[in-house]
Image 1 (cartoon, rainbow, N blue to C red):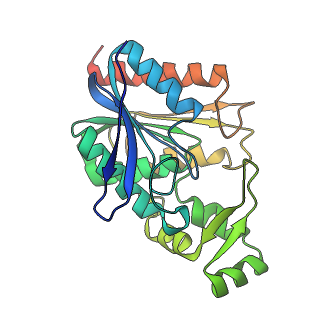
Image 2: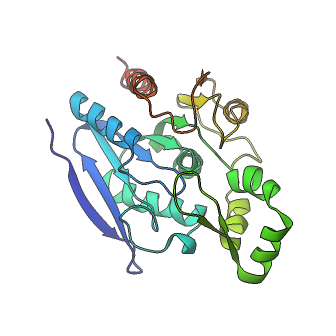
Length: 254
């Protein structure tokens, strides 16, 4: 089996971005993780192993402030994390790519698709959450949280998966600037959106909203009736692998 390579990329300001990649056939499959997630998650590793078996090039990475990359989480924002991903992809996978974005990674994949046009050959979203700061976070803010943002520039959000998460005014302000759901996204490649209907973080109709927003015609929404936000059960992973295999066949003409 192909051996995975790992390394760190200095983004130019002393912050190093961690990555892991597999050589293989193109286009390179790139996994983009979620908010406060990292490249060691179940889905990232399952996709790595699938690509290794297929001889397919694969790349995973940690944004600044995530996983083992440098930087502080509270210093980052959507635009900076998208730039982090772009830097690593340019360095490690400079050719055509298929972007697989989980939760926030779905937003980042849409930003990159808008930036790179034809270089992105396909998109796969897993509980994709474009514009989640303005669509989900901001409307749910309490008066106390708004006051804390105004006075301190951040507040701590309870997190069902671990320690409280610092939510900064910078994150929310930048999120509005990075919106991808305010105008149609011109993307002609195949798009597959996997979404659990029991997702407590991202309402399942977000997937249908994204589908309507995309200009292309080859857009499919796959709803998993008993699926949660993570979609990391064996059956969910099998569906993800089958979805990627189908997109690869389309792109490679098989």
